Amino acid sequence: MASRAALKKSAPPAPAREDVRNETKRRLLDAAAAALIENDGALEMSDVAARAGASAGLAYHYFGSKSGLVSAVLAEFFDRYDAVINMRMDGRESWAKRERRRLDALIAFLFKDPLAPIAFGRLSKTPEVVAVEAARWRALVELSAKNIENGQKSGALGRDVNPHIAGAAILGGVRDACSFVLSQEKRPSPAALSENLWRFIAGAVRLREE
Image (tube, rainbow, N blue to C red; front, side, top):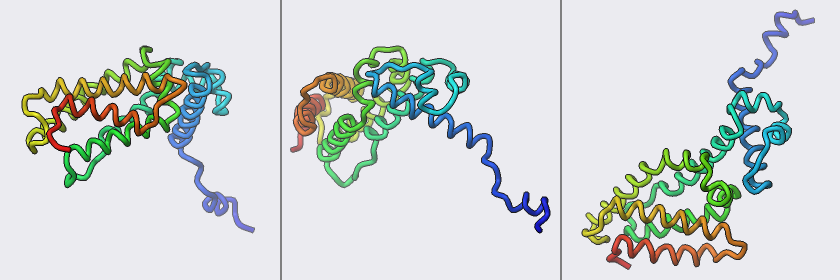
């Protein structure tokens, strides 16, 4: 018979405390996202805890408040949103082809992600969304301006366009248009929305190429 020491040595190690903590937080975040989607942007900590198989006290411990939990869920949504906007494109393509593909990918993401109508709809003016977006806005405008400057250097865009003003206008316009569309029961197709927005973008940067 194996000794107790040998059995203890051969037994699989217990999961690290940090792993357990992260797994619990993940369950709470997933449960909160599901609650927001099902309840049109509303949630209760007790419901989220029950969905996650955890206590409400643990939810408060990890996120501080209901607002903190909602902010954490929305931060993950905007991480996904930013990843699409900032996705690496093929530098061998023309500026117009690259940016049209980026726009198509963004619209496809917004139509597919079930949190998009919540983040851009009922919660769009809440302190949670405003705070999450404000922290990212300047960085997005800077990246957009740099992209426009590169298009100007290549001769694809009008050189009289202010890159920062155009970048801010495009980001804000696309976001607001998508927010409006996602709030409608009868939406245009992604292709139709993309075509309309592309005309707006092409005009804003004075696109010179087809």
